[in-house]
Amino acid sequence: MENNYSYAEFLKAVGKNSSTLQSEKLLNDIYMDLFLNHIHRQQTKERLMGLIDLSLDCRDEQAFLRHTESLLKLEEVN
Image (cartoon, rainbow, N blue to C red):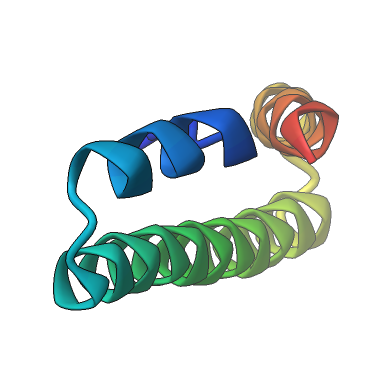
């Protein structure tokens, strides 16, 4: 799901296809991808926070460390 869009790539694509409809479609695809990535990260973060809370409640140190590490890796990407 991870696409790396840049303004230069967008301009190249728009330049090749001078159609406004195609440009708008590409821009919509970029926005949709960014939106879905944001939602996915948010849901993953919420799930990990819940698992961390559960591991604290159960006093499960291994699970706590595992889920905390996953959360830290997710936060590094942002």
